[in-house]
Structures are given as C-alpha cells and as structure tokens.
Image (tube, rainbow, N blue to C red; front, side):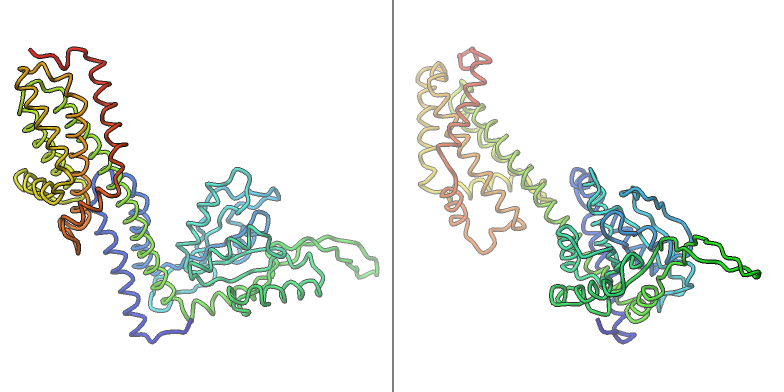
Amino acid sequence: MNEASPSTKKDDYHSALDAVRRAIEQFRACSEEERRVLQRDLDELEQMSEKLVSGRVEIVVFGEISTGKSALVNALVGDDLTQVNIQGGWTKDLWHVPWEGIGYCVPGFANSQVVLIDTPGLNEVDGAERTEMARSAAERADLVLFVTDSDLNETEYGALEDLVACHKPILLVLNKTDLYRPEEIQQLLGLFRGPRFASMLDAKNVLTSQADPREVQYVIESADGSTRNEWRKPKPKVEELRTRILEVLEAEGKSLLALNGAMFAADKSDRMAALRVRLRENAAAITIWKFAVTKSLAVALNPLPAVDVLGGTAVDATMVVTLGRIYGIDITTSNARALVASILKAAGWVMLSEAVVSYASSAFKALTVGYGSIATALPQGAAAGYGSYIVGEAARYYFQHGASWGSESPKRVVTQILESTDKQSVLERLKTEIKKRISLNPYAGDAP
C-alpha cells in the first residue's frame, strides 16, 4: 500500500468519515422492529465514527489458543495487563490495551491513540461465540497481528484466508521461537514466505517473536571461583515486530484509518440493507397472506349478497396501505383503491375466473336469500382470497421499486406473478382456513 499525498489522505479520510455518518443516518429512520434487529450494527457504526474522529488505530491480535497472543500484547506494551495463563483458552473477552509506552501518534492526529486488542482463541472449546467475537474485532481492525507458534493448521489457514479477503494489512507472527532450533525457525519462515502464502502475505510482514520466553539455566560464577546454577526468564524479544508495526503506521497510519472506515461503512450498509430487506419481505409475506385469509373469510362467510364483494375490495385497499407502510411509503386509501383497480385491470382475463365465481356466488346468495352461503363459501372465499393474494404480490413489487413498476409494465409484472404462483396450492390453503372457521362456528354460514 503506497503512501498517499497529504491532500489525498485528507480527502480519503474525510470521505470515509462521511461514509460512516451517511450509513448511520440511513438507518436512523428504521422502523422500531428494524431498529431492534439492527441496533448492534448501528452501535458499531457509532463507535467507528468516534474512532475516526479521534484517530484511534486498533491493532487486533488474532490466532488460536495457546499461541501466546496475550503474552505478545504484554510484551509489546511492556506490562502484564492482560490475563495470561498456562491453561488454553484463558482469554474470555476482548481486551483493549492502550499502547502508551511507545509515545506514538498517528500522523495528522495530535491526540491519537494506538490500541492493542487481544481476542479469544479460534479453537476454544464451546467458544463459537468467542470465535465470532474475535472475527468481528478483526473485521474492524486497522492492522491484524496473526499469531502462530507452528505451521498453520486447517482452522488457522482458513481464518487467514478470511482476513485476507477483507483486505486488511496483516503481520504474521511466528511466536515462541525459543522452542525451535535455528534451522527449524528458518524452515518455518521459508514456508510462510513461500509460494503457499505468496498471494496472502508480503514476505517482509512475516516476523518472529518470543513474547514469553521459557526460563534458561545460567551458571553463575562467584568471585571465589565457586559456581551455582540459576534459572532466569529472558526478556521478551519483540523489537522486530514492534519496529515493523511502527513502520506500517508511520507510512500508512491515516490511510489505514480511511480505508478501514470506508470498508467498514460499506460492509455494514450492505449487511443492514440486506437485513432490512429481509425483514420487510417477511413482514410483507405475512401481511399478504393475512389479508388474503381475511378476504376469504369475509367473502365466504358473509350471508348478504354483493356486500361480500364490496367488503373484499375494502380488504384489498387496506392491505395495500399496510404494505406501503412496511416499505416506508405512505399511500392514501383512495390511491390504494386505484392501485388495486390497476392491478386487477392488468390481470385481465386471467383473473376473470375469480370474478365469475364471486359474482355467481353472490347471485346464488341473492336467490336463496343468504341461505346459499355455506354452499358457496369454499369456492367463492378461496377465489376471492386468491385474487387478494395476487393483488398483494403485485403491490409488493410496486413498493419494492419505490412506488413504481420500474422498467416493467403492470401487465407484465402481474403476468409474471401469476406464472410463478402455484394457484392450486394457494387455493387449497385458503379453503383449509375457511373450513377451520366453519368448524369452529357451525352457524357461521347460516342466514339470520
């Protein structure tokens, strides 16, 4: 990643900040249900905005359990601030540790802060939630330290591939090198800098460390010539890694913030938009079926002739108004009626069978003074409900495209919906609903 000119950096940085703020504003107008589902994403966008404003750089330490991640954070910071234990999987939460010891500020931010974030291990037992937590932290990171103490296993390699796909700067750290002979270290470094990793890692970003060296036995000779054995823990060896981190930050610190902020805003916007669409589509599907059933029952169980037809029209108009609200579009009842009429007109002869059944059934009711209600309930109700279902699906398409038919004509849209709908299945479901109501109220179809 090449360092951009100061003016370019400034533009990139402010563009990223604007992208995050636009994403926040875009979803502040969500419905209450949408906000409840998307609240975590909105909170993370708010945190990203604050991060960009303050110029905070987040470096996430990532890897499997027992590779020495927490010890590495301690060694870089110069103090025992994180939980380190010989038992694998000791890091239970994310640890945010300010890297104050180096006195470093990101160029362009006088009061910036570099933060090291230790994460739970990839392969902790019953740690699916912690693994997701680690991945989420890595996605938000400006720089990733991927820590290992050997060749990568399948889990580690897959995680590294996922991170590379996020286009994050990655430093691969071979830790615990005090456990290897020099030739073994060179063999591992050759592997990480070889063809298998060439497309994922820059060779200069493969480094070694001894975050928590094992004790070494020293022979201490006294002034009188006597000797004694003493075990001592050497100081951590992390200078190579520390230097490389500072080089990356010095060259690309502000660019990293800008790139990460822009990518984060785009990813969150896409995710939230997808969730929002899914919520709306689910709500629309439930609404369409609910009104189709309501119209079926209203038409099937109404003993009065003609009134059932008029009532069915009112149900369709109310359904359209409700669908409009789901998609954030206000539509009046009169406009909803007009939309229903245009959809039925576009359906043309294909929907004629519903009209024939409906009006024939109404005529039969009139002739029998309402007593034909039971005989006509199933066919008339199911036909009416099916018509409402088609109207609802067409209205959904209309609202999905911003209260327009897009590049299609109403007739073409309705035809496509009719062709893709399993009419018989819908009719059978509606008849089942009508039968349930009649069985619950055996007098529902009787005349007064």
